[in-house]
Image 1: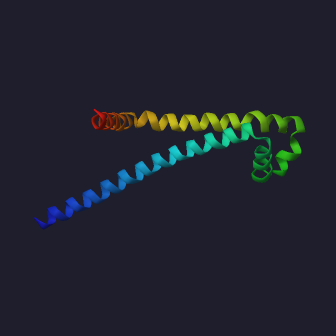
Image 2 (image 1 turned 90 degrees about the vertical axis):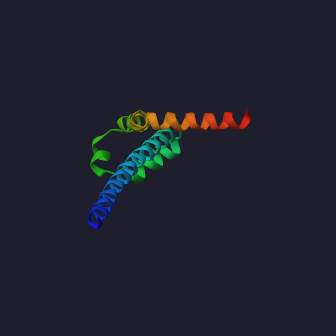
Length: 119
């Protein structure tokens, strides 16, 4: 009896740890998608932020030396912001796609509880 109880506790601990880690990774992906979306929108809409972001965080001497000013401006204005926005939307969509049933159940529960309070 005690052995069965110890095995049950061990199985519960391992499975709940695995599920917690997996959900933590999914949430990290969701937050990363939101961060990509925000940074992409900021770099696309704000020239001072874009210059600050690129010049402080992407100071590669080789890249600076090999590309012309026109290519740098093109990269600053179009390349990264669009990639960040698309990447963010992709990560958010992937989270929504894999958690669709859970999210729909939460929305349905909220709708029923709000309608139940006011009817």
